[in-house]
Length: 373
Image 1 (tube, rainbow, N blue to C red):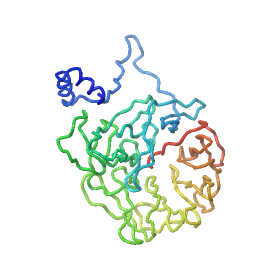
Image 2 (cartoon, one colour; image 1 turned 90 degrees about the vertical axis):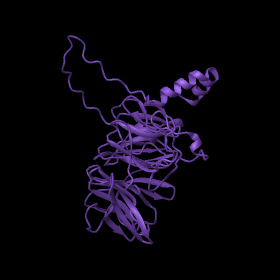
Image 3 (cartoon, rainbow, N blue to C red; image 1 turned 135 degrees about the vertical axis):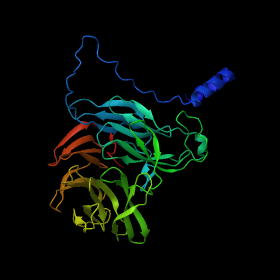
Image 4 (cartoon, one colour; image 1 turned 180 degrees about the vertical axis):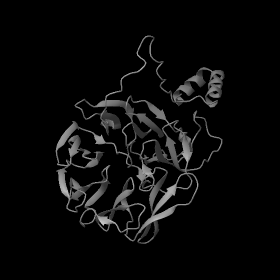
């Protein structure tokens, strides 16, 4: 029930308002779940044929930050009917306001009206996870929750809560100053679980039971930490004497890739073995956002030369990168499969093969980050 509705009810009848609030605070959910099918009709076959394989959709933002999805089968893009926040706010060690699609393409985590919602890509159903009172923040421009990223199996979402929560029905929580920090959200029930042991977020651990974080300890001294869920201390996986630590870290399974001393390097998370170069050294900030392929065979990244950005690929076993194409304006990308990338620029949203071939899925749009920011 919106605040405008409540004001209207208050003006109409104070008694009715009181009754509604009592019923609401009793725990009635604000998100309406879609009921399961009533089952097969009489005489119908009890065993339906298995569904045909469906390509994973690509999710992007259209005008006014409206969510769209398109399946790479020639179908037209369709709106999910949800407008989201995408103002660029966030933190390098917590997350951001931009939406993030799950690795399997089923869910989009986003901010809408200052609250966290998770949208089903299949039908646009929005599950509202948090509820805030605007009075909790005098600064209305402050993001109250930051989206960190999805677990490798897409069953959980990591977020950072930076404002006072209310209970599930929208009534003010008994504790006016609840614990702030990192929380996980399960797609099975949409409940927030506080994770007090976690100090920062750079990516998920391989088993999905913890996160990794590039922790600053002193000048030119960083530790790549692994924090478990629940209780327990963090543990050091690797150390770096780079001035920026494990910059733009990207984790896939047991391996990670990052930028160190202006070079893209990769290494196993749980090994003390020296990192190996995935690309040659380049001028400062000219190589950005390295991303490991799902099978960890290749590394893709963006090369910046002045105002020009190019999508670049470093194939496994070589440090000689190859340009897959020059982007029209800013280059946003992610891995769609082990052999294909999805890219957005000023010319639209495209699938790009490892040979540089391009298939345009939509004539305009901004790619929603896949898995993590």
